[in-house]
Image (cartoon, rainbow, N blue to C red):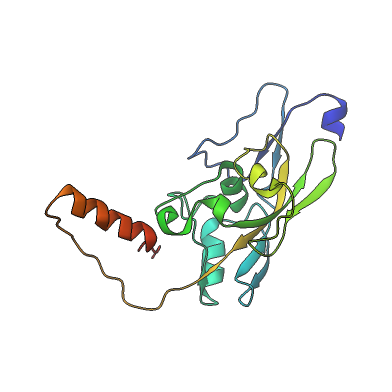
Length: 193
């Protein structure tokens, strides 16, 4: 509210790894760090979700989820040092995006502080909860331009059971290759180890 009163741009930052785009302030701006907002508030095995503050590191959430037989799918290359808030702000992806989607596909809900100081809650605890415009996913990837993320509810997945297998496939022609790729798109086989 004070920043608004004095017309100061507010630039949210979390882990500030800047491996995707990141946020840099301009002269006269106020950097608002969410790095200390780093609590995992809830992991619900029954609901397959976690509620976290934006400064929680991806790796820390994944480690806590794995202790309960679950995992957090988005796996950007900076997973050990990037934050959930930063990933939500930039809609980060990673190798498992093929199967599990990018951050936007794994965010169920958000709490966001708007420029006028109001806090709003978007989304919920289930994947299908929209009865109007999908504002949750409008904010994911907005890089802090619409508001500052203060809480994120994310989808968790059960750890797959089985033995990882790596294979090489050869195809006789492009038609067979296209069919093979199509089959993999229906049943992707990516799982972050």
